[in-house]
Length: 113
Image (cartoon, rainbow, N blue to C red; front, side, top):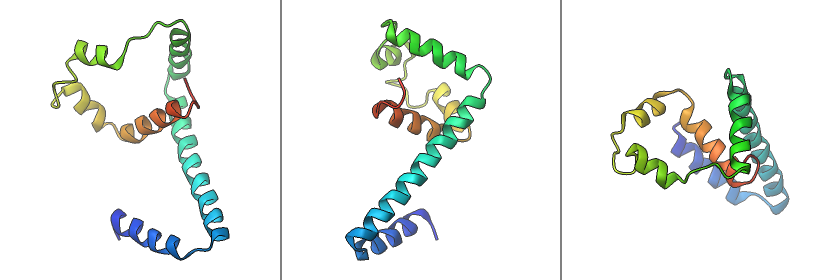
């Protein structure tokens, strides 16, 4: 069974649940999502120098020493180049997309700065 089929089956089950059971399902899905987030965080913390780099980044943000994504894109030609080799290399790293998505979500939710 592929991901699309699994999601469809889950949607069918969800449509059949009572309000009380929906709350239980929502709590369980929240638990699973947070567990994934925690596992991703643990993996990041295992990277040598990550804690120090994160602390330095937080300090820079507090001091306003940041540049916009648009400025970075212009500087490194990412906005116009889908075939950018650096992007291709990052996307080859196992778990990068997921870790990036989790970090982006956590920043958006204010969990990390």
